[in-house]
Length: 297
Ligand SMILES: [Zn+2]
Image (cartoon, rainbow, N blue to C red; front, side):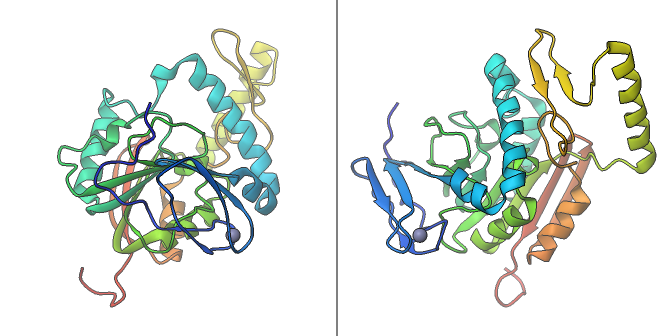
């Protein structure tokens, strides 16, 4: 596996995730760079960059971080036992639909995929016409497969300079961030004026009645099975996942709610330009950061 930078591409502009001092991406030999402003460390290797994102999150969002890490552990356990379950394989019909949506709404230039995962190229990035796109992926999981620039980091505190991405993508990843408000604020900071934020999420914003019914079902199942089904998730092979208090299932700390995401993005100055609600697992949203004039692009 080569770590060579993508051909004909310049590295994304960097600034320290901790203090915003300017940094430069060295693409020659593997090297560690400490921030001139605060000493925070960045490890570069060709097109790959990692930094101690967990330290930043732990210091900033302690309780949410702890919960988030436990849920990430669950996701890793399940992924390791069946990688073919990955949501991003190009053979899946929903992935193909999001690819088409993304290609229709993305703006050519630098594209950042937040939560890019462990595939070399997620199916939704297999564009029919990738000409003019410069791909960059960010994920908390450390990995060196991604075909473009790849950062091991978090959505809340990225090492990118302001307003440099024409497109930012969240494909079933927005509900996995540690702090949703902080992630939305950071996304609005790094997207360029006239640039787009394209989101694939689910809708779990069921009404009170449906929630109560689910809760009653859970109590019934717990009695039937003889263990707390709202605390323990038992897989067919008897792998057991723990669902800590504060989590909505074994993997998520938020009920996915498109209306909440709409409000959140709007509060951060992003305008919704499209919302496509195909079903409760496929809600596609597209936001745009207005240009300085606030007018036409
Ligand atoms: Zn710094």
